[in-house]
Length: 448
Image (cartoon, rainbow, N blue to C red):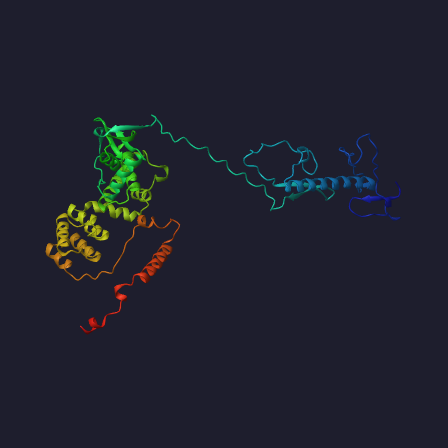
């Protein structure tokens, strides 16, 4: 023990005492019968004697360092295996080779989480430290796709619905039904189809307190059945409130009718609006996504229309029957009819008579002027004559509704793409059908 050159000092220097220096006290570590270095139980730490340096034999220090290096390598190996997604035995998932902590709450199988980081042992400062070993950023555990919900039962609550055949005498039209039943070409096609194949779709009815059933959807089918010589009509009987019946009736006709008059659409939209308002007051039957929206916004979304268009159609309900007939017959444009709907009824009838007499409607600017004068109490019959007999210099405008465009363009098409497509088709049409203004003037006409 006298040769201190064979010993290593913890402060990092090999010291050889000179003649004038007192040799540091040496503490010998003896075998106490416990575990040797490198095993689980390390020998008892040496103590400081008389305030001198702690001197430990080199073989013991080498053993401690070897143990720490082995633990660090083992931790790095485990971290690498975890980064590759390999299975690691639970007993090896400790911190740097040490026994693992108590098991935490298990993650659910549906949403496994990638390990954040593992602690690896390191040597420094005369003790065991902990350096973080992180998994690579690009090696992330893929998320498990969500399991789709099982299909829901389409059966309505309450009584099971079945198709029953009801005699025409037991069927009554819907109160204030806004849609006409016309014997046009579509009706003839429907009659022929019923004679050949029967009904593809049953009518929808609800019981009446007075007895019998009220037709909710299926007025044209009933008329076609009568014309086809059938005594009854296949129907689905359903209990519905007035509001539910109105919405079902209007939506069915908007969906299945190929042509709808302006008066029919105006009245149907007004009925829808009133029904939605009544539902909103009670918050009964209103879809969760519609709570908090304005009624006209809900109606616009249901019918794939703009909110302003809905308001304009509803305003047409203020037209007099004579003026409304001109609109249905397409003798008065939609926007002219909208402006006219704000004019007093007697003056509306006078405008309608003037249109029939002249054979042409007022322009949109003329209708706007008459509406403004009427709001100030200045519109008279002679004023109407003066405006109507003015030379009509209106810039031609063609208004195509979004519902009409939906027949030809998908919802993904932007307004610019739609416009470009229409202009391209018009250019192709012009090549095949030259306009009158493009035709050369004949010599005889020039001489005249």
